[in-house]
Length: 229
Image (cartoon, helix red, strand yellow):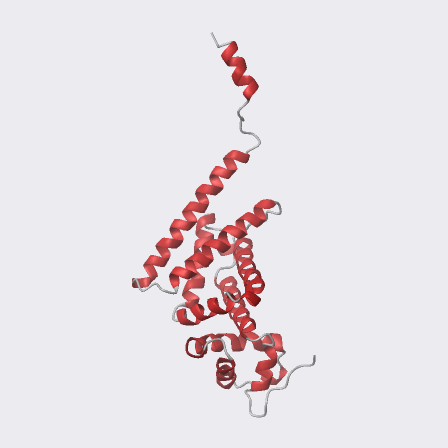
């Protein structure tokens, strides 16, 4: 598909942007409107008007409707997180702090848009959107782990992302209804979940350590028969 042309009178440069380039420009505006109008065509048209993009072109940027808009919004948060917390900055922190910093950044990026997030969850929970929703969540969890320096390729690659995806989803569920000062309840919930995962990872490492002396039934029975003198 060729480059979409913005309508006459649009800000200079918009007519030269591709749909992929227009999408993030619209996403934040759509999210702001979604708290009132949901992830709807109305929110899309508001965003188009606010950014000076031709409404017909804006619609072309999100052929899948609501779920496309939500995915684009989350992608802008992913991109902003990487810019604010590059891997080299995270490398100076402990692993748990690397993960926490990224999740907290995402919460701060969505502050004030809790209703939009709640409505996004409703859209993502629809049966026809479940596969996309899982893929979107996995992509964010994978990005956070890669930014944190994780290079695993074995089963740990999948367990880490599954656990983090679960933590993040549960934290968002608390966040949307959190009326505590400074979202302190959400942060406390997140800290407890991360601590639980760290304990699990330590226990798993001890169990799977190839250098660790494992229990031997034969050796145990031999000691019963021939106790040390």
